[in-house]
Image (cartoon, rainbow, N blue to C red):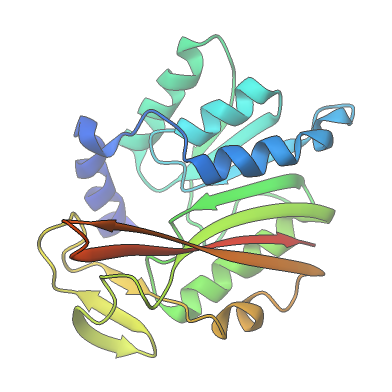
Length: 221
């Protein structure tokens, strides 16, 4: 974890890698599932790879009993300050997506925004299995993962099927290992869940010279 945590620590020290506003797709998912807050005590929410905490803060504002994990202590510090600034609470801890420090069936809602793509296909499957393990029956998760149409795909050394160590230098991702999913991969990776739906979100940049392409995946245990 040390090399990865140092990389993300360095990024989170820079304000431009600490976005303030939640992603529209995450807002839509949480607002659509606000009925889960009708439970007593409030539904438990986990943000896996919370970064500087923009989505953790939103979940706390909506009334979820909020938890978050990240491998970056610097990111966790900023997330903690962000939540406390608005007078709310969240239980935040340093941990890996591959070994979540929670008991089975302990969360109603799980979010992971653009995190599971950082690693190999085997690691992505392990992280997905961890999500299923901690979800309660009927619990829901929302994950954002990169598609094979993303501009990063193929730009680096091939390590395995749809897996590359990136060589691009225009982002903060130089030398990172990333795994990409084709449409036919998604049902196989999430076969253990009782329900699956997924959409594609694409945004061009550089006068349409490149494209960010993501799967928006919603699953239910």
